[in-house]
Image (cartoon, rainbow, N blue to C red; front, top):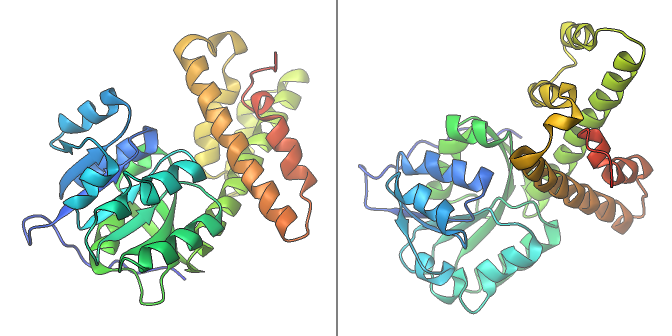
Length: 296
């Protein structure tokens, strides 16, 4: 189901404060977008990331608990399940200080059961926590063009939370109950990374045979099979290995690590349901090669 936009609640309409925890590439871009329309407070362990948002009008806080004490809605985009658990339920986490009726959107790609467990824990505090998987990249976040995949609580997404989500989204999909949005995001990642792997392998074939890989891209585009994300990946595939060093190499290493983690989550979800996914395992194990960076 595609969720329709719910209308906006902006800072000029009513006194509300939004919190954002986790200011990496994606989280920072989303926070920048949100700061255009809302009073925003932020928290991240990286001081440079915080300062960047402060320069754009956000207020810094010293902990997740301090942030939560003054927020009506909080978005989370941290690294993994353990980080999400700590940010929400740790001694200095959101639930230690937030008020009843606060809403929490988890954008981090984590196990659906992590969302379900935290949803129950939050409900004990009369707080609504739900999953809101995100896809599209930082450029889409800044343009308000993300794809956002929701797991919907029994009583629906709170109005303010949905308004904040709509601020960053080009399309919103309601995947089902709590946890379903995160399952959809994991599946989305599988499609994304397998397309990247297909593009990388096809490029190698074309170059190896002395053919023009640009023509392959044109043919793929002509049939409507070339998606925007995959097309944005093409320049990286076409880049010579020696260009993928220095700062770019460090960035790609981090990106590959995220891909490996996301695909490992997909593999584990398959195993939990009694199904092996050898193709996903193979791509997970060869992500450096997909990105044109041979293993050491």
